[in-house]
Image (tube, rainbow, N blue to C red):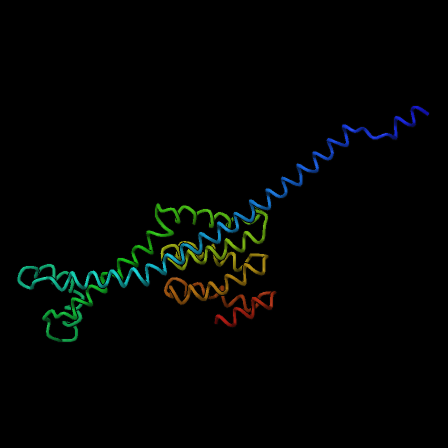
Length: 242
């Protein structure tokens, strides 16, 4: 009788240990959920910041730089700064030579030269100074690329989807970055098992084709291939983009 009682009575220490383990597992699960959520937000934020910064440069900063250079060029004296004027307006002069027009430099030529110089400077900044180079966003872009290349490493379809969108945003910033990672984008577009990834990248492909036609056009066969995608949603988006 004593033996039977001893066998059926639970050990309070064991019960306490099991409860602690359950609490630890639950807390660990919650921490993992928080970490995943923060990581998703971070990836999204990197893509958005890069894209919004490029919009700032292309809109506000470009216009400000144009006005600054126009004002600067208007102060140039034909007698004192003739060599500099010739240098900055060489495109206008060459165009006039081709058309057989008077090669005299006018104020319009100086304005055009200022606008061209400002546009080239902003394009240089976008191509090499935002998601490329040694900047903060360039470093974070490497993380985005790692997630896109190694979806099994992160084991979360939502992380892959957000990273794919962030990659597309970064590619919209720089023609150099776009050219370097078109292969990665079309590989994900073609082989990702996640429908949402393919949906996002089809739309992104259309935006990139509009932004950098010379870079993206050679890859359009991969976009057309999505017309045979197993997902009707992907096929529909492809038709809308085309």
